[in-house]
Length: 236
Image (cartoon, rainbow, N blue to C red; front, side, top):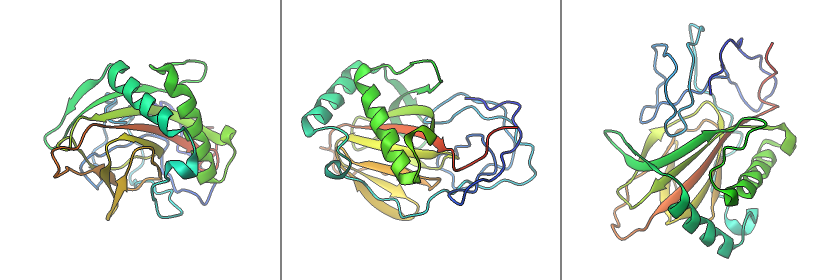
């Protein structure tokens, strides 16, 4: 998702302080790289990024509350049986790609969300993503039509040894957790995400820590990246 040729965006909301509309992911590193980068391939939500012309840049922080899991009984996105069925379908039907780094291992699959195109690989996911957008809109205090999805990225953690290093995004993020319960590190807190939990993030550093219980089964995260109209003005 390359935001080429766009001018820096003007602040338009107290919800956020974005310095650029470009995605910048630094997985396993709390600091943003100083060196400008050319466009890179998408991996774990790593949207293509363009050279930033600004001399200084700072990570976006949108949060206005402490991030905490929203259990199924509160968001009601799916019934327990529907969640179980979705988890099974995703495990079997998604064309997972192995993704390894020096400090992590998991399988992934992602696609950009482009107006007028439907790239979702599983029909059963479409209403789930719509529901996640509603949760995102409520969190941002805006209407559903003011939420602008950017990308969906799926992660499959086959066992407790599969992890995701601490990283951050220059976008808002809403995540649905399916399957085995795993600990997510958000800033300096440890949060347990259980089957059906949703969490909304706005620039916080986060990651999935390695588990000690080797009997823990697989987990899938459905990660929807987006921004809200209240964050920034439109492009020039």
